[in-house]
Image: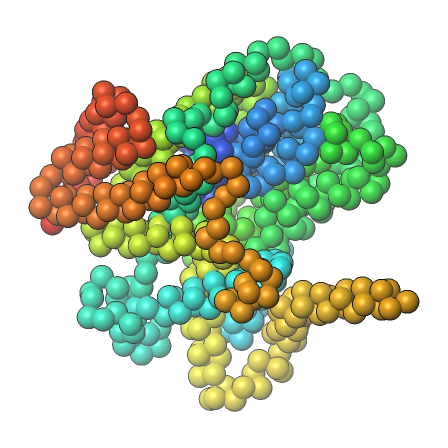
Length: 506
Length: 98
């Protein structure tokens, strides 16, 4: 069936839609003002009129390509195009300053494709077995899984645990707006019929990641009429490409680190809430520890650039596996992809693999084809990337607001959704300024209804007996892991403080 | 959150480093007027036509962000007309507020 999916892509217009997505993702990813999450959020409603496979071809193309392209601006102007590209600035920019622009860009392309293809292989191999296992999940297991997703997202907030908890609980509260899932009674709708189906998830995302981000960038503006390259001189200096390809020795020296990073990044991607930013930093640190020349890391190490380029695309396969098999998003973009699948009337989870198996194979094939396109496009258009960076920020901001309006209106042809989108934009702006992570809020908005309906269904099955959550092995494991992940951060901090006090005392 | 902020000495909503007083004031005005502009857009769209409302918003925001007047007007016109015809003719979505 996978072969059939490949044939379908190359014999129908799916190839063109995927190419469209890859090109759009390249533009979105290169511009530091736009992230992959923002791009997918804004363009999701615009794919509503396409067939599901066509829409996903565009969105997956944007997702994969934007993450790769984020490394281009990270390398060229030391400003990550997407959050996942932060670690690429550690070494990529130094390699460019040495005059090896072509090498840096080609390494970003090649290793992004390697990471992405590895993740796609994992998706292809692991998805169906995981989905078969997940078919054994009943309401108690689904409740525990939703809780696990929520606590993981909160626990990766790190030192901002309190902020993460606040965002998570606020998201849970907002998710209760609408009709009660068991009794059908309206909750918190205040008589507004538009709120009977709850706060529209995709609309809220578009607002928070679109308008919210524009307002945030406005608040941090240091100069007017500036391009993303900082100044035009900076952008025009990028003309001498130097050598394009790594040497055999460079490839050999980095091969072990590359292999390990492929595995690490895919595993991290599968964890809800952990995205490319975490994976690339973890892989960079791991490679530095393993390296015979750790002093080169952070000063233009080829291995450093290779593993970071690989890691931020390697997470995608893991995140897609978790999203498709369990219905739990692995990162922000997969949360939006869940929304887009729901827009097409599909519910991600194990049943998707039974009811829509050809569609699932199409997604797997599209991942592979997308990366091959990125390889070709990336190696050919390396020099052209600097041109995109000359666009003035102001045009991007205005265009983003315009697309947000169109996208949010287009889902239900309702101006109410546009109003919700603007309000969500304000909320997103306030969250960013107050250092409150958006991830827990979005995940709670998505997982809240799943957690609630499965919790209530479990109690209905057990006739109110809570022991249903403590007598099923999978449920117990998930609940224990959730508790540990939530408490681990504060416990580790307390232990470190105590160690620090003991050492001072000694 | 407030307690945590006081304990960690975190200043929420603090100005970013490198932003001058003049730019900070400009940024606050830009944000407030952007929000007001979006509200005005919704009202205009409800009572008039999408193209007019969108043109006012796009051109207005362009001018607010200090884009030159001719470029702001051209960009606003192109976006509002282009988006209207793309949605109504290609995607068959009527951009009517009521």
